[in-house]
Every structure is written in structure tokens, then in C-alpha cells.
Length: 88
Image (cartoon, rainbow, N blue to C red; front, side, top):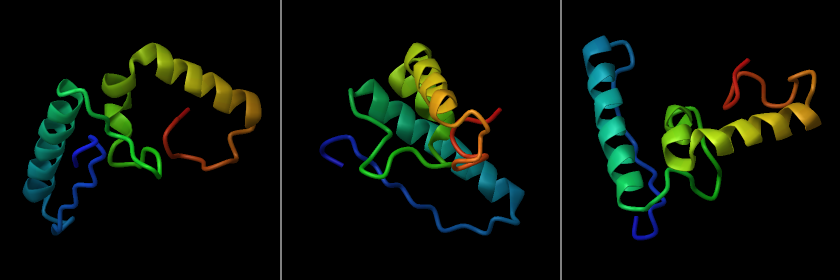
């Protein structure tokens, strides 16, 4: 946590919509605070599904757009890791 590399884990009942909503709120607060303090939402494994929505805030929309373009250049058919970070 000292380098801003967070791995928050929430053990929840995914069928409980109220509980899942509280998790979403907590994640926004945790990741927002980490970015505000100069930390990052990414780690050694990159950005997963839980952190995908926070990528723009952490890196800036311009950088995310560049990443999308690089992915499109190397994967024009969208077959590599489909439906993950860069959704169509």
C-alpha cells in the first residue's frame, strides 16, 4: 500500500444488490483517494475488471485513448482478451 499499489478485496454475496452497491461506493472512495494522494490503481498485473472504470481518472483520458489505439493496432479483430479493459 505504501507505493499506491492497492489490492482491495471484498468478500460479498454477489446476489445481494445492496451489498454490491456498497462495494462499488467503497471502491470509488478507495481508488479516488489513492489517485488524489498521487498513488495508482494499477499494480504488477495491470488493471483488472474491478479497476477498469477508474483508469481514466488515474492516467488521464488522453493516455487511455492512446492505449486503446495501440491495442487496436496490434489486435484489429479484438480477439485478444476480449471484453476486458477496452470495450468496443
